[in-house]
Image (tube, rainbow, N blue to C red; front, side):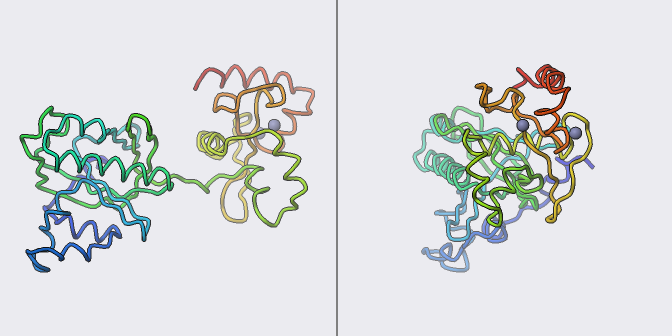
Length: 279
Ligand SMILES: [Zn+2]
Ligand SMILES: [Zn+2]
């Protein structure tokens, strides 16, 4: 079955229950004139587009199933609630959109995975008016957490992907230096140039554990992650940029060879040819 079909909501579930299941504290939902028995329809909460529980570090977003896109098994979702809020006339709805932007900003800043309530039903997300209310007829909490792939603080543009970032699946030589058991002396020697941890992570993710020179899988570390070394094709000392197109993941042997081997120049040129200008 197609992933999108798999995550499509099959039944009309209550937002409150799904938010609770995701880890949101919903105790306050019952504090309104409708009372505890009507907690699930507390208007202060039940129409919200997002939920944040800072105490538990949980962020939940309501997303429309029909706006999810799948490519090669990766599900993505593009949204911009801040921009969306500009099209909305009613203050209450506008504020929901703005709160959703704030929720995303919080998750992005705190590097939190987000939980998604997948909604199906009539929607007017891209409509220029909110005259037609958004009504979800079916909902489901996606069992898989999502990752904020991009959040542009200036514009509010957001891209989410389904699945958690495998932040610790791959490690390089700097991760091992960051481990507290290593002598701090060597740390000083290698951190002369600033290296972006995000670039290293992205390169390790791109390499998927395989040396980008020989294709062999790096060795498995004690914690089951795969070890490869990140290497600047044009060294930082030669003003090479600290970007994905100038950084490769190499097995330790080929990393040494890229620096000290007879073939160092050949390796550099071949890597340049393969990776440069591909950002
Ligand atoms: Zn190799
Ligand atoms: Zn290197």
